Length: 216
Image (cartoon, rainbow, N blue to C red):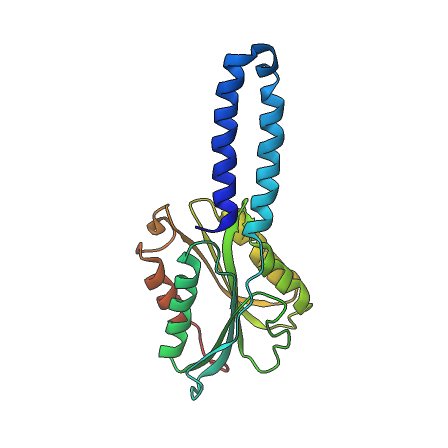
């Protein structure tokens, strides 16, 4: 388990143990504990926010370099589980099955900012605090204007992602991107609420297969 969650859990355990001890020793001081708890929880929220939104750098993975259907750049943030990465890989697999060349990388300062060699941009990440993960939004900002670039957004969430996908899509449109598809996929809520099947990876693969090649 990563260090920060372990420390957070240990802090909560110590807080509970300390509250029990203080209640037994000095109840007058114990009455002031709610203020201390609020401060500690605020600190934990700030720490978790920065931990969840830490950039992950990776090299570009080139898939199907001989493909002739089109070229796609897939940029994503993996999140703290493997769900979004699996969904992203499934989408890339769908493009490859239709003959696309696909470059896959994570949203960091190392990711390409020139899209001149690509026919399609696929960008996305998980939802934290009801918004798209910050590394993805920062990457979009570094791109500046998209200049009409055909773009697909992929947002994942536990069960409440409509606000997140709306923010993501609006960012793409504000950057003058041509939004050709927008995928919202859940980990806990049934995906049948939005799609005809529940399997998120299969939904992503099918969606990729519907993306027309350049000129179609």
